[in-house]
Length: 219
Image (cartoon, rainbow, N blue to C red; front, side, top):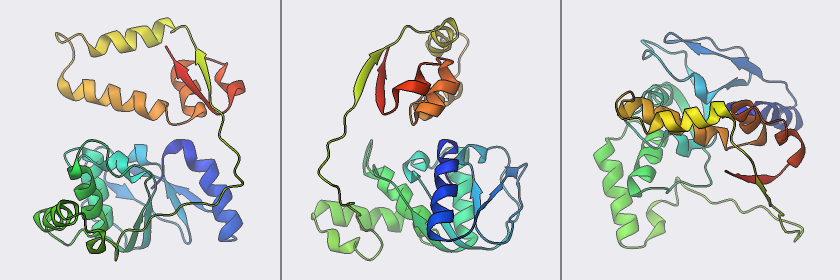
């Protein structure tokens, strides 16, 4: 389960390290069809109805797992079903804690879906309360890649908002027409758009994004 913007990257990595080209599968109307071998599923497709049944998944890998930190979203609930249908699970995230320790509780619960959420909460509370990471070491590891010492250079670009973007943002603050659910969906879409230059270009329509590479955009 991967962010849509990382599909090509995951295909390249699977071909490099697994010596096979993965299949891109789809989840729709509660149905998931898997092909033999490695399957890539866009995280954006985890919407709609809950799956009544799912095929057995040998190894489930969830990239950018923090996108599912809210257990009340439909995507998180569907992913929990996926986790229950898998034999092994690996969740990847660079930011497991964003709002509170409940973010980590949700991620660990997806990793260990047969445990009660209250049990996972107790483990996390014990570990963080005593500053004792040994409780989490059997299931959590931190990978720090080696670098050549080169520093990442990020350039700032100031961009004029398009009319479509301006309307999109203003709609979020019109309480007479927007429910809290639709506002949250819009905010989530904007956050996903900021996850890569390709996503940003699709969302904004600005062609400049094809040229600026690793950058930060300010409005």
